[in-house]
Length: 195
Image 1 (cartoon, rainbow, N blue to C red):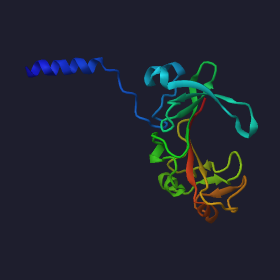
Image 2: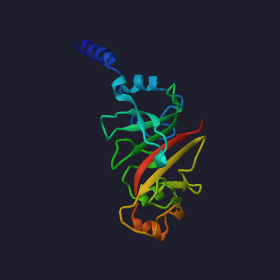
Image 3: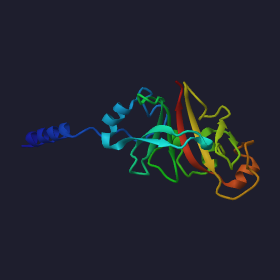
Image 4: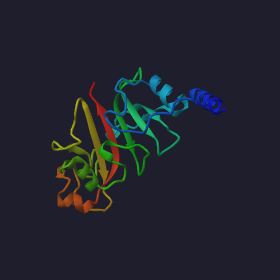
């Protein structure tokens, strides 16, 4: 009787579709050779849609593929090296106040800049706030989040305190008094793949 029950359980498990992979936004957590078609197979066709994102500084719209567009907590935006064929991811991106995706070294949306500095193992360089490319890491200073094997980790922050000391396109250290006064939090995490 137990053998029959076990056999039925195995048969039921064999018929269930495989669960999608964990939501990992890391260099190793996403296939560099992914396509829109392969994503539809892995995550389900209804969870993969094509959209357009406004370009920076009023530039032309950028075609993107979105995973879980209907679920803000699981939304992931993908740009492609070959946009027409939806092939070879160029950049993966999450943004907002919260996400179910886990970034490199445990970085999460809305975490304090000090948490990112701890994950990196040292201070890093950030652009000033108040413009389209503001609050972005420009140099990890050789820390744990530095580029590796053609893969880059990008993080953008937003200030939670209105301060004039960390504005503009200048460079600031993450541990500078100006950055600390702004109490920045993670607003976007990206993973970029070289062509």
